[in-house]
Length: 147
Image 1 (cartoon, rainbow, N blue to C red):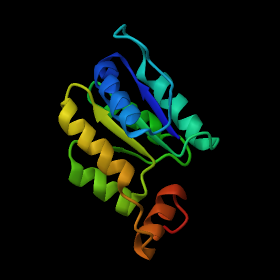
Image 2 (cartoon, rainbow, N blue to C red; image 1 turned 90 degrees about the vertical axis):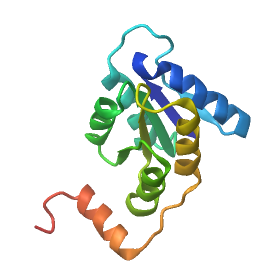
Image 3 (cartoon, helix red, strand yellow; image 1 turned 180 degrees about the vertical axis):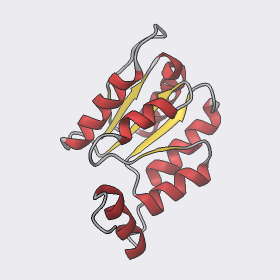
């Protein structure tokens, strides 16, 4: 299950993402927002993060105007590794190397065609499982342990 969240700046692009997920038959839970009316992006980042933390969802997609604020908020949550991606190379690399569990995008930065390719790449790329990447993820999650 994929957790979805956006603010007003990401609302239109999220509609494109939902249409793609529907077409692919992929299950998702939409945590909002539900219109172009101005809202606060941290609310939606936290809803998606909590769904991943409690095991309701495996991955998440967050969209705000730039993708920056919503990814910063998500990354403050334990166990969340949100990656702001503007191209397919970044989406592939963050899955392979960082085992990112949340994709963040900017609705005012990435067009719908590219966004769908980024989503597809993110969802279809597995974590490599290589020892060096496992070690680095451990260092990310356990700040100060090996300093």
